[in-house]
Length: 135
Image (cartoon, rainbow, N blue to C red; front, side, top):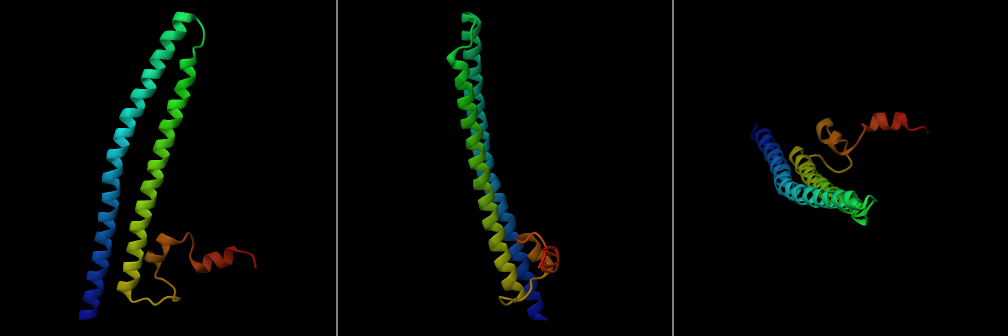
């Protein structure tokens, strides 16, 4: 009985650590996201204003209009880098959760994993994966 209670407590602790890991990643990266958004939109808007002002004055497409694309691409690249960093942080938290959950359940390496732990890491159950792949 005590061992069952200990397993439940270990699983609860693993779940709480997962929640804290995800919350920490989102807290850090949402602040960065707001800063990137503020700075990026300011830069793109300023370049667009300058390009429109110059093109209206000249009656032609100004070189500043081409720089809008440069700032926009930088903005998108920075957002993509942040998305990838967030994905890695959450992946690390899920990996840690998976290891702690497997340890809490007392599963030895090489044994099939229970469904909830297994489904987070792999796209299809082993029985479906082997049935889906032609041999």
